[in-house]
Length: 80
Image 1 (cartoon, rainbow, N blue to C red):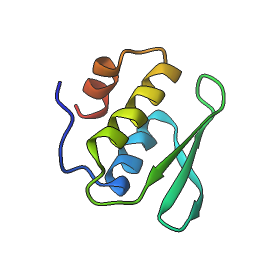
Image 2: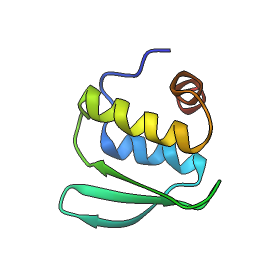
Image 3: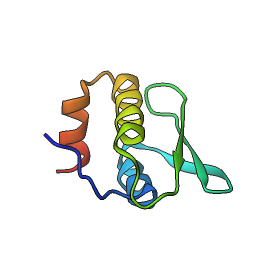
Image 4: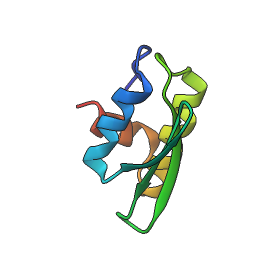
């Protein structure tokens, strides 16, 4: 599945909330999210509109690896 090209940082934060992530702090335009599902995991997401594709791909790959999924499986669950 293709990743949406116009996804903002705020939209990604909302979608990741379904996987147990919540904003723990924000410094400038970067938000730090934490999840305790499958062990503690932290990610940093820039609050940009839209997110750059490389940045988005790296974030999704990291979260997918933490949850034990492939990137494609995670993207499908995130955007269904």
